[in-house]
Image (cartoon, rainbow over all chains, first blue to last red; front, side, top):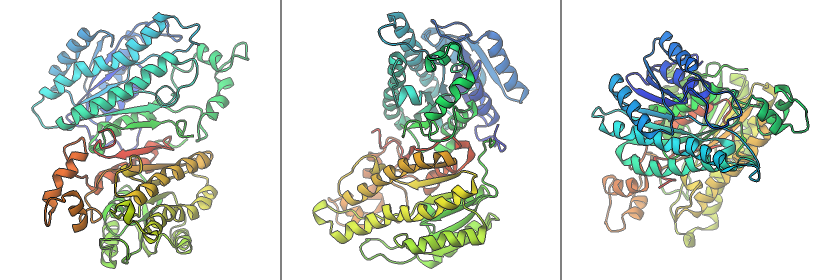
Length: 284
Length: 280
């Protein structure tokens, strides 16, 4: 991780959804390393027909173990972000246990892709339910808890959108692009609404991140339909061609460093911002 | 692959407009993270600019503040409009400190004028300093950065006014929008060398650039001699967060992040530090 983690979030509580693995686990560890207590939420099971294996209860336990073994506090709970009642109860319970809620990282999301002629209504609906409504649910469950807090602490909401889906819009991602663009509108309206009450709201837009969400046979075949059984090495060059920097993808920690910046007082005057972490993908 | 981190030990940064205000805050912040700093400022009056420019004593104070962090500070008096002088500043940087890793193109000026009152001279000064001056700052750094083959970070100070277009600053808005185009093209071009190029876009910052009588009068035409307190409410109404202006240190936080390996894959972006003014 960073060589100079400084405890800048000491005494704060951070909610991270999709925390069982991948980017969410990385965010939980990064924020915990700065001293934040973590509320880790994950569905720990299959969501719709995503073309990669689902997170498991073991994954979420592993995130909790990693936070605890580095000296951090964490409450982990298995909840589907589509379940507003469940989410509301889990957040209230954990915030009560940990002493409040200051930071929200709405990270849970799914990916997929298909031409519109082949995409069924169920696939569309699941994507909107998880990647857009799930984000709204996360904020909806959190803001009352954040506003009820009497202690005067900086508060920050970070919504994870996407560079490809939120800032650009490649073909065969109609559902994903709609959901991830929608997150920007949600973020901007909430920034205006909550700013006067001292809660900042921003979005982060990662390019492809080196996790199972891109490294699977479905994605490989989507990008290399010319090959019978494409693998990681077959897509590297193509992924690199999307970026200004000579990189095919980024690491979860690179997104976490942006999340940590937006969660901390280093960004106390930043709200309503779309922050790409995308190697130049969206500006070319 | 570099391990991300926020420290800048062993790196060299050049900061323009460094005698005071945002430039000074950036210089001191980058030094605090471990970088040696070359400080560039014109330290002279500019006829068309309606507020006082920095003076040599302010540059000396920035030097003192940088040195207090334990890092080297090399002050250079130069006008960013003078391409030859800026090439000289880079030559001095390389000669004295051996390398260049971070360029913080911050120097800029403003006039507040109706478009009908902007003269050709006004236009030339604002574009010359704010846009061409940034080009003059960056251009001499590119070849040495590429030759070093260790990446680099260029942070350009644009403005929220370079994203939106407020009235009574047509030349300023044009210069600050132009910086975004410059940044994007350089970002795409220099990416293969792992040189990152980004803009910050601050809202009103609490510096001498904002606090002068004619500016106050423009924002409070109803008052005879409006004071800082009289204009605070008008400035606050432009932001989402309940503040009239932000501190230079708030901008420095964003500059420091973009300069560091924590942002090693961030390039081609405009990062507002704007208390929400762009979404309001």
